[in-house]
Amino acid sequence: MTDGFQDGGVSPDTLRHLAGAAADAARPPDPDDLRRRARRRRAHVSAVTGLLAVVMVALPAGVAAVTASPQRPQVAAPASTAPASTAPTASAPTVGSARPSIPVPPATAGATPPEVDESLQPAAEPTTGTRTVQLFLLRQRPGQTCPQVVAVTRGVPARAVAKEALRALLDGPTRAERAAGLTSVFDDDSHRFRYLKLDGPQARADFTDLDGILAPGDRCEKAKLLEPMRRTLEQFDWIEQARFSVRGDQRAFYVDVLHDRVPD
Image 1 (cartoon, rainbow, N blue to C red):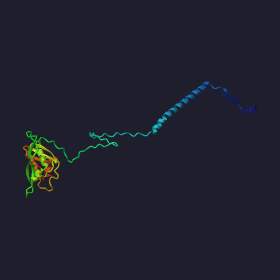
Image 2: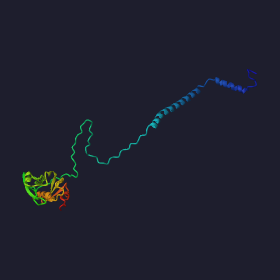
Image 3: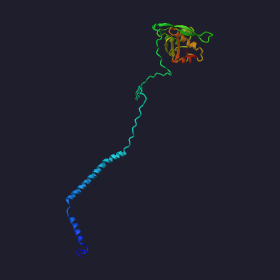
Image 4: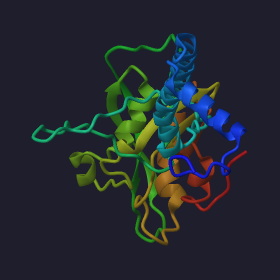
């Protein structure tokens, strides 16, 4: 037995292996091997660092893409097909400023613009000064249902004399004529007159209305209303037939007011 080991317990091969391992452990490291290990370590560290950099750059963009709310698509409104208005647009008044007052003419239902008067008399007729004409008023006779149509003389402007004569008739009798017992269904009614239009030898006078001219149930419409106006206009040589209308409608005069038919 040597040093506590039995001589027969360890083989020579075992002893040689232990001696070689001890020699390797005591041998200094190879510099080339160390350099190779250092290069591999640096390459590994660089790869890991590059991967981390890529992850750090991509991560915020991905988070922003996930958390951003989706945009709602903008749909353009369809273009209006209505024509553009040319009327001026009034701006809203500011606080403390006075709102401008714009006068608006009253609308009249069914009204049509008055027609432009054409030549109301021949060129040879005088157009200056005054002219004496006849107006036809009424005189009630005892025992007669409808009044008698009588003529009086009156001076009117010579220019457009037929129109001026009709206006004078619509204004009604003068005080002296009333004192003489003459009457008329007209009394300050020239404002109802719209225009007098000549069409060859035919004249047509138009009115805004004739409401209230005759009493309800009056059966003397022609004697009181039609005859005075017709005779006043037909006294002039260039007017062979006088006709009448209300707002351009002859039926409104002959049928609705006179309870007759429109003449041919």
